[in-house]
Image 1 (tube, rainbow, N blue to C red):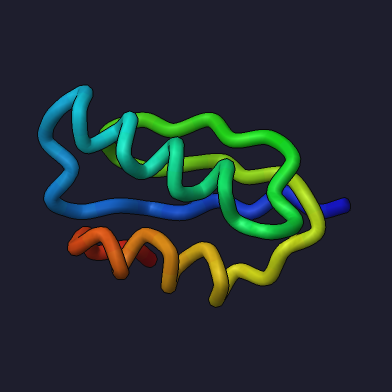
Image 2 (cartoon, helix red, strand yellow):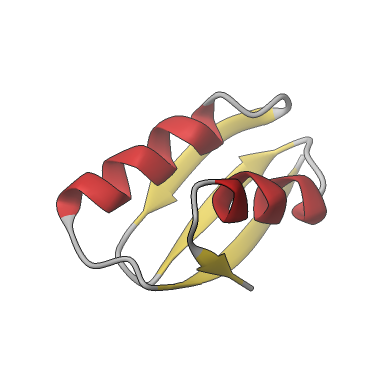
Length: 63
């Protein structure tokens, strides 16, 4: 299992954080997520690219 750090841009509200949290938790292989306005820590068996695509599909910039 690995731990992946993501950095966000354009995440301004608690609603944004909740949307990202829900989407990441629904991503296959994700076991645990901690999300804040500036980024996330994700634990599980998932590729970083999959997490970035998930966040970007919501309309946010992620690195």
